[in-house]
Image (cartoon, rainbow, N blue to C red; front, side, top):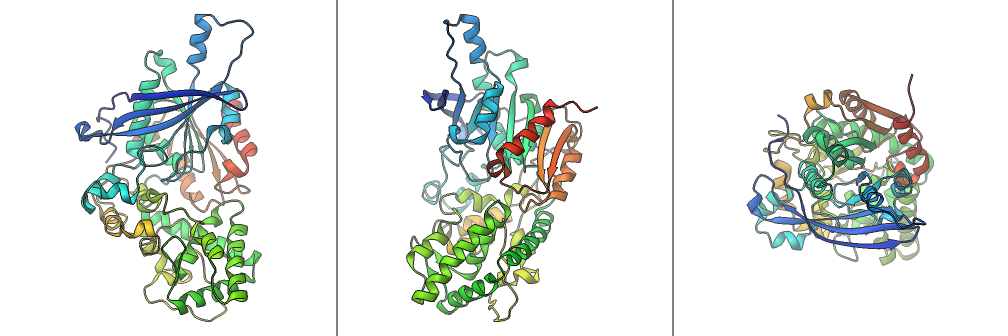
Length: 472
């Protein structure tokens, strides 16, 4: 099954546009658009899509004539598609892409995906107003990458209305999950694209959620081995903290929710990025120091843990994370990460009733996985447990990718792929790069998943070289 490309995508309605100058001689605009909630049922209501546009502020010596002004207004667009799902964009003047793309002549558009940032953001309180668990699950099911692509197309048609067809196409830049959106875009509406840039975003097209997590758990095990090799004393530290949590039956967190052994061990999500080892080690050190000196976990130590992963403020990340791998009907996720993980000895702590042994074997941290226990220990997620179950067992998901169209792709694709990526496993990413015709790839084993932020100059230099350099 392939995505339904027959669904009509009308131009978005521009509700408001506020422009102002920001430091660095940039001109930025805050844009609010109105689009259908459900493109298959346009009468079901609308939602708001928010974006920020940033461009070079031209200050000519002489006043521009009408033709110059028209050229300035029609600078080609590059749209940044953030990782996630579940996160909005940073301010554009602080984004690494701005200082690279704007001098190259682009105006860059940072769109918040539907349901996140300032695009009709989803929260437990907001969902409660929609209706019961069935209504909430239906609403959340409209928040995946297929409808994000339609939102992008609607906004593109709005912003380029009246432009010549050859200029009305735009470039997209997908980081992580933004790459998943980009590949769906290539599958659904390649006619809107001039070129595609990806960083850590070669989605595992054609793979089930189980296959994805089997691969990412293997990489997570490798990262645990590397972590404990770097911080060998933390084997005992983790055991000490886990024993305390078990003896207390969990510890209440300052803003609600509970710190349990499974929640402690999900800190390993940070292992996939530069600086992740140090962040986890420092958090554990804070917890151990509190136990050693006070015989309890004090508020400051607990607050550091509860803000480590922002699932209370970014619930779409938790509730739809496995759904982004459900490519078509009869492919429920069915808590794939939980099922795969608890069958692996290093992650036996996922099994109900598991009791930590006092052995010297290390307790392994999980990675970018969501488990049912998240909906027991995060206050914002607790009320959504039934909704999450409905999402996990849904069997009628629309398709996300068109493999035949990707095999015959004509849009240039330039990708940075990270061999040591813990989130988008490299062997699966490589299969996708071979699937999508015309893909050029820069591969490296010295950059982790957050390379766009941590190694900006290196990654972007290599990525644009894929486009600009001539290969004999």
